[in-house]
Length: 267
Image 1 (cartoon, rainbow, N blue to C red):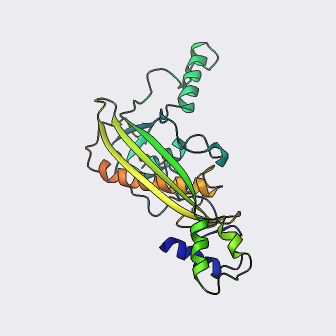
Image 2: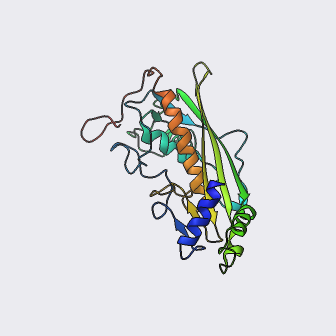
Image 3: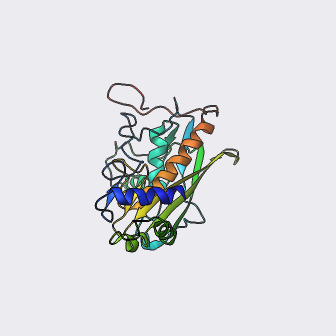
């Protein structure tokens, strides 16, 4: 009820109530920026981090898929989004088990076939093992709340006669994403940690007035729609909760750090 009242109040205050507007920022999602030898750059201020990595990590697709309607035109997988979070947090050294790995194998095969130069550094036996596996889960739902808002407006004298307001509230949508992250030790198969995350926004009108902390800079593919933004926020929430558990784990024996121009390891 409080949420719906807040929606009505903002509708009155905003002159172009049906136009595209975002409460915070000018686009993008809460998962933004970059990660690498220079550390986490442009990450959301709410991202929870570790002082040092505890293990190498790979991310895998959820075998049960993701509950999101195809009509939203979102990327088929949230894994790239979570990989950025995992690297930015500094809790893990992330190893690739998808497209990057396939390309590595191809380069090794090309060298074995004599296509590559003989002094190429691409060779077998240099890959890092994934000590942990992170598996995401996602459920996205959209609920029509327009009827409830219309009922509130009908009870407030003066609002009932506002031109166009009655038709607008029928377009109100509550968008909610619920996510999970499961962390498994690949040596023992034990599930070491699990976390859930959630986020909710209110979308007003066909253009969409989104309410909530959805600002940011990047997150390609997840920053173009209100649905993508709320999903990104839910994964950030789950990741932050997972990190509080990861901090309690004793670090495994890690491979040599990545070399940088200044001779320091990447954070």
